[in-house]
Image (cartoon, rainbow, N blue to C red; front, side, top):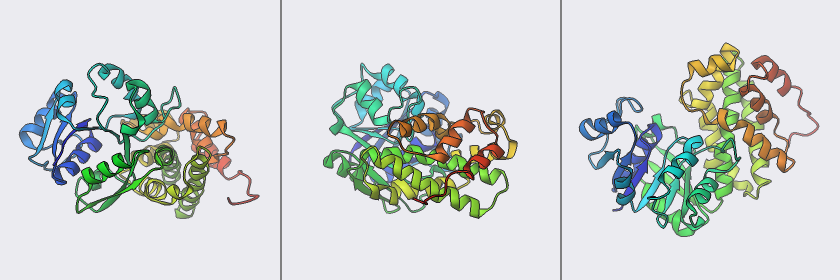
Length: 332
């Protein structure tokens, strides 16, 4: 049994805290919202983010960040990607650097175009050997119901890989180790943009032929993008790549797909933002991912189109027109 701190009381942080509890660990979850923290402690629920879920008795919650840092032998980050740097700067003085830090964030920082683990290492001046990542096709709404699922535990350190496997494995949650941290991280960020595109086609009342085209061509883009940064090509055929794309594009629970659907149906980014008032990482990361691809000379037509779309530069009809005009000289 281990003591684990989860930083973030949203749907994903609370779900992972439940997984850790089910794996037999003592878990303390930290959040800023006093009402949410009180509800977790008193009612064993987090109705705002996980309605209908009864949380384990060995899950405790706090608003005291110092207590959270002191409690955990390992620390799990489950906060919005674009707020990571600001939070780490605020926490830097008390953050325990020589403990495993496990990221669950999927995104590229918009301003710096850094991966989330790069932000962690930069802001905390932490040894990369302490850093890990949990990623894969994991929708909080399903995993919180303890439906069978799988994930990848990626790190450059074999010991951190196995630590994550031990921490998170339950009868319903399989965790597979990987040393391809870059590939897993880039796949998790880029798939969100592909899910936006699939959602857009659904909102436009286009059929499954169109969706299949976007998903498969999108996977090809994500793989080329990741390989150009040294990732293992096989990563994109596994849970962190293909698995995450299938879940994000195929499920109505996916925030990125939800936002894309609203954009396709309403026809404007402003309208979609009003309808989907949640953190949507594909929207925040699209332009940064496009720039990262261009830096290494990789063409990513779907990501390029969606990067323009989320800035309001083009409509859904114009986006589809551009996608259908991409060169067909070769499929791969």
